[in-house]
Length: 283
Length: 199
Image (cartoon, rainbow over the protein chains, first blue to last red):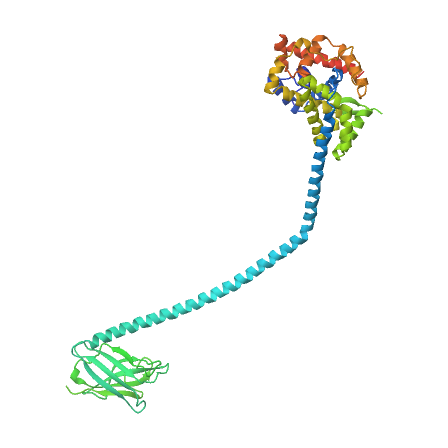
């Protein structure tokens, strides 16, 4: 608090009369705000005194209609206030009634959220399943594509063999274990590549493979393996296999081609039943 | 019954009428229109006279009177009894509104034309009691008696400040006297009034 000084009491009189101005007004109000009880009391006391001054004025009579006008305005104000109060009351009543509605609203909202979660979960799971199925399908299709690419590659290579100008063909017939089977060796002696075509061969067990043998004229008891292949299904369908390299160097040495059913991966010498056999024609 | 309360350390006497005024205001806060009518009947003549003294216009004084009582109706809940009587509250509202009006552009020009020699605080001494039907018979007599004890110079600076809305600097300029003299006259005049009115 700014210390009380005598000069402030002089200010208090002018302040009570509303006549203090300039820097003094600013300084005195700051002094009052600082909490000077002496000056505050002085102002209050002067204020009560000053308020009595109008009592000494020459009297004037107010217009007669001012009372009615004032009371009419006040009545309108009171009416507006009552209406506002009534509206407030209604609002409060509505507000107080709202908790039940709100609770139902809340329950509704909770229920809606739960339904949304369930629907979302179901949708999500369905989506996951769909994605899984699609992924499986895509994987399957990719496998098929890979297989088709391999098939295309194989057939392209077979086609190249077939396109050779000097090919020889050796037909193979079914034997006792599978008389309906048949096959062909399409052979390019210069490039030493061959294509094996088989049909009507039964699918091989999982632990078995068909094995192609070249039987030479000089050593017919010692067939030379030309590779293994498997017919997994669709026995009636024709299957083509590329045989490369065909290790037999001399075409004239080849006496026949045979196919036997052997253990998976093939064996050095035939051990199983012979399914197809085809002899070469003399050159 | 006289009630004594303390306002900022100052001891102010509250008359039964002050208590009645406070009761009226409490009723007004409750929205009783009859209470504001009663308050109007008590003070309208004084406040109209006061407003006319400052504004010098019957029409403006009439509007001012209505505005003050409407403000009392609407702001009754803001009244703080410990800061003064209802009467002082009403007079202060009237004065502040009136001074705000005369400090506006149009009134400022009029106020420049105030004949400072004609400014006074006291009614025509020969006139009959203007508040015979009102509540200020005793107060009016006391105030007039107290004002008669002031010097003309003291009455002049107080009247120029209170009724004409001039600042102390403006008064010093109009009267061509030092600012300190204005301050001294104001303070001494108010102190003598207070002493005379609290006897």
